Image (cartoon, helix red, strand yellow):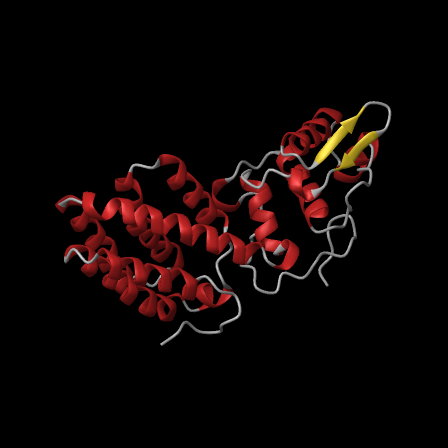
Length: 256
């Protein structure tokens, strides 16, 4: 089992993409307080620091992470703002129950999804993304204009030919964002974007992006063609299949 910097046993991330817990992922600021807070987040979310236990006192954090007191204090304040701990005068910093955690905080959501905390959070996140994305597509379908179709088609052609996972993923997200934006529901769109951005891609997709997208883009084209033809229900059915099939962690290969 991998070891944390503190020598503790880290839960095995069997199906998590490499770097899923890296605070520098996707350009995140490489601040000392961020590095400390994300390691403490990992320990809390994984259960290494159980609910009701005290976090190490500030001097111990300073020594362990080799940071200044202000840096350690800022990291703990972040945990408090995210709802993971409660700072009690004269007692210390206590880990709170998970029902109080702010899962809309990107770092909390990302680490919880990477660790698959509770064994169902990924499935719940996919279902939530599916429900919200379907509602956006239903709202957008009658509002799409020619420019939207031209933009979607350009992203489809990219996914037909590109081999790089990062560029395939960017075109994939851009395709969906065309109709998501057209729906005009900013709150729902923002939550969908958060779920998609923080969800760790299945390793099989990263390992064989071209094979995965050969299947995925047939579904993208089917969504596009159904929308073009005014068959919104067919587009919704295909979107449901697409999300349900692609965002799984047990299948070694996408469905044929």
